Length: 99
Image (cartoon, rainbow, N blue to C red; front, side):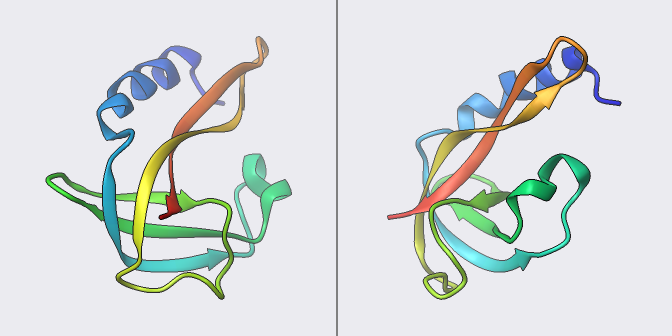
């Protein structure tokens, strides 16, 4: 079970990662996902080295494995992940898209 307060605090700290540019270091395509993401398979996840920032792991949206490559340029953005708890609080997270 996910704690909505912990989820909110995590989202607060993710703000500094938004609207950044970076480069894909490695990537993979997920075919068997955790229950909250099972309706979204297959999807791509990448390690992204942000310009002037950390390396993050995030979903690559609006693409497939044919268009992804190591060294590809991406931009981070905010995406809806799932709903949390009985109150159905919407959980958001950092994702990236090819530039």
